[in-house]
Image 1 (tube, rainbow, N blue to C red):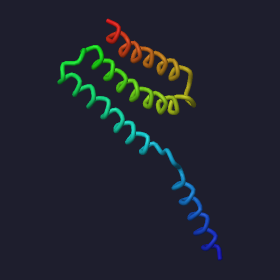
Image 2 (image 1 turned 180 degrees about the horizontal axis):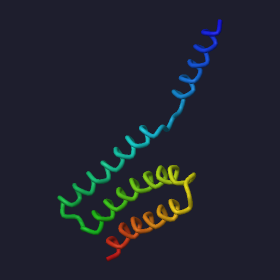
Image 3 (image 1 turned 45 degrees about the horizontal axis):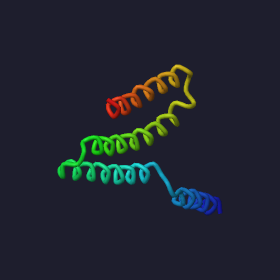
Image 4 (image 1 turned 135 degrees about the vertical axis):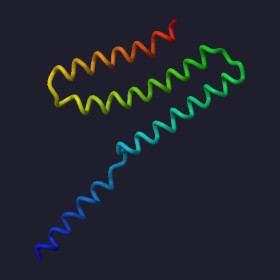
Length: 106
């Protein structure tokens, strides 16, 4: 009788974990698909001789999408940690954002 209760509780756990719609693996896969499409469009436009600023803007958007996803996941890691980790996270995020924006403007 005790084994039946254990097996039903474990089957309930597995069925509840299967119901999650947006797992980390799924988000990573679809992010790569979306970014690949943006980079492919930028590559085609570049080959056609379109304005280099438009091409670099598309590449910047693709890079920004990846950084946003990574920043969210990094914040989940840093949130329960000490303040020094949070400060390091913010400093790194600001430098990365500047690294995206400055080349687009200049």
